[in-house]
Image 1 (cartoon, helix red, strand yellow):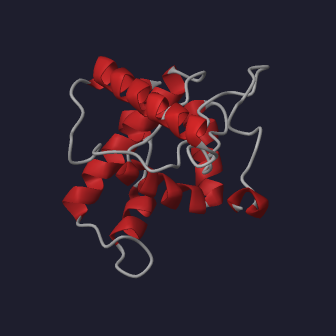
Image 2 (tube, rainbow, N blue to C red):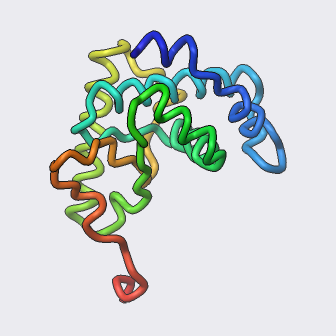
Length: 157
């Protein structure tokens, strides 16, 4: 699976979107290539650790958002390269202090998994996370803490 994702997953349309100054982030080609490679590594971590809340770096998360927006490609890529649909849960870390602590712990675990799998984290591309990770879990009877409660306007009071 690892080599298939690294060598066969075509992210060029997503890269073009990321480089666009109006619709994307205006990234350079070299920078975009680097983020795309790190995104592939994130997908590998999700695939190899489906029961772990894998948290992408902020830049990888930005790239992931663009991939998700191409819903047909994202669905096909998930099925073809992961074997399941990788959901995105954008509320993790914003539902109170314990949730923020859980996000920090998940980020630290992701960094350990990354370094154990790929070596040293490239600090410029993995500087930190947003409050926006995936559930990274297959729904197979495992209690999923990320889908239990979505924040509501009443929670802001």
